[in-house]
Image (cartoon, rainbow, N blue to C red; front, top):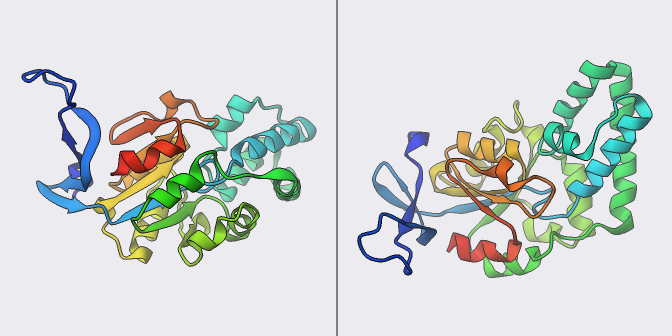
Length: 250
């Protein structure tokens, strides 16, 4: 099914006078339109870090500290631009290209330890996320650049793991991480869903690009570190409060 055919079913905003060429960005029903055919939404795919758990700030803080310690000074904005939404392997490759493979190995090992300690010290769900999950009735899964061990830890610490157990997918399972579409297509396939009938909730630029490449509609959560303008683009609805999500999908 051609990826470029994916679009939302839209309706005219009630406050707009008849005859004005303005439409609302809220779908009438849980449907997407593909090749002229209306398809019910079959699956909601969630990223993990920054979407389910409020861990991106922790990760950025640790990456900045490691950069200063190991010889690659980075600002938080640079960390967001280079690392947020990327797989562990991709980040390690970037560090190796800059500082060498030996330092990249040290960086990776220390990041995992420092990140785990910070998570144990006080990780929480993204504000409004539990309420949003309670209000959603569609099938859901997680597809993240993080490893299964990392997700088991972060989702477990926040009481979210059991909500998604058995439906959690990692970039380690595919050959290419975000912004390639492989992970989201893998998640859809494992869940038995048509990619054209899936929606993705993301908080990073690589994530929304991956959703678009997979032919999936994206909801870009701009309540975290990534600025809204970095999430904007075709087939992306940007929102700032996780409590808004169920109404947007409905």
